[in-house]
Image (cartoon, rainbow, N blue to C red):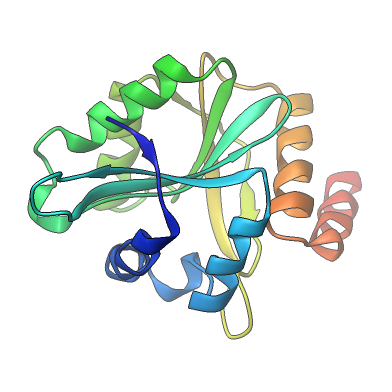
Length: 185
């Protein structure tokens, strides 16, 4: 069901990414495509074999102690049909590590529904405020929270995960330094 995306499918995935996320939540086309040079990065897809269309995708970064799902989207015409839950189930069954993903603060209806969806699929909401660094020029930082499989993470794990994401995914040592300063206050 989940298979590693081939580069020939990148344009279709990127179009779905643009349709599914606000501009601040993904990189520009070239920067996103360049990530394929990083061995920790991959895109997993579910594809309709007959129509050759991407049903859904998830962007995963695999690190030593956890897997980070950066983006996860289902084709809008297939939402609420179980595709997303099947993909998460396949990912969690194959993973031998904790899985981490980001969610918006559950203050609006769609954000609450998204958190509940992930909870139904075995994720735990972690109450540590988290800032997603800017994804590029002209893109804003975003206040989010982390969710995890297996269990809630403790503060030490949160800091390790945050530090890994800031340095390896976002390349933001300056943001990490600012966060350390805030933590000390």
